[in-house]
Image (cartoon, rainbow, N blue to C red; front, side, top):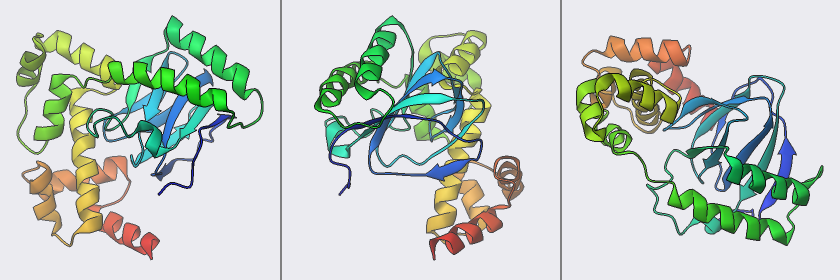
Length: 244
């Protein structure tokens, strides 16, 4: 059960030091100035003044500031978002900071000011915003397909056909939706699944590589060295040491 019982609003800044964790409450993150990098099982992008981001409860994420920054953040008890299907907001949701969200941000700033607050109006404002979030939270079919089939051989033409796009248009559309290329997104999904298997099982590295979609374990080793600066074996050992 979460220790957070009411919505907390606060202006925050983020350092350039990467932090990876999970928490049992959701967050609505609205940029005020600058940017931060954020990664979830669905996204890997720089959150700046053009977008907002909703992070669901129990979603493992990594973040760090990339410039001088300031964000308006709502910490939201898990029970306040329990009416959504688990898959609906899995991995988070990024939306354009359009005129409607600009107005919402102004209302929040009026309530939050310069100090953290859990005033009742925040609850009413979030309930209104959450309804809008859910109404826009339909995961595109190609992205849903990737999440279900990332361990299989995939090609761009197949994914583009799911959306009814040609491959060239699909590539640009996908980058705008997720902040990543299709290849980067696929590698990210495989990396997250491999991390889970390394932490929770004793399966050999070669077995894990095949289970997440790589024919040879060397491909998984290269992936870990590129994104984690560690081998899979070293990542497993490090994660287990930190859990003691």
